[in-house]
Image (cartoon, rainbow, N blue to C red; front, side, top):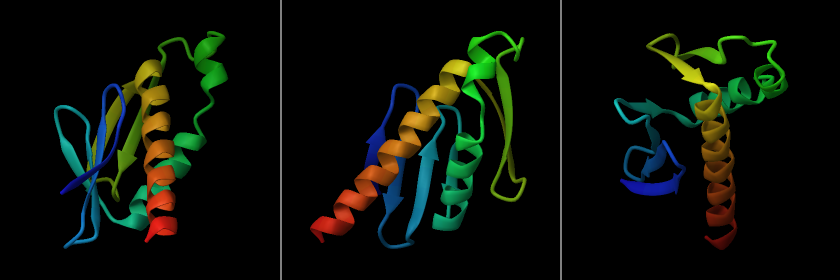
Length: 101
């Protein structure tokens, strides 16, 4: 398995033989197909960070159901920002690798 991108809290990897992506959330590693990774990116982009920062989201938490409800996560504001960095970096590295290949 090859590490694609590492953020402060999370690590994204890809297995060349199975063509699957893995995100290590620290306590759990989740396997994603490319379509599931795209759906996860869409969910992250739909989070309104302004609501977290201006106090509208009082608890500062977001609940995510991943991979057809196989996994349920609760992330705080810092983790959401870090996940957005991870996913943006992961897709940037995949695009860079596809150009170089």
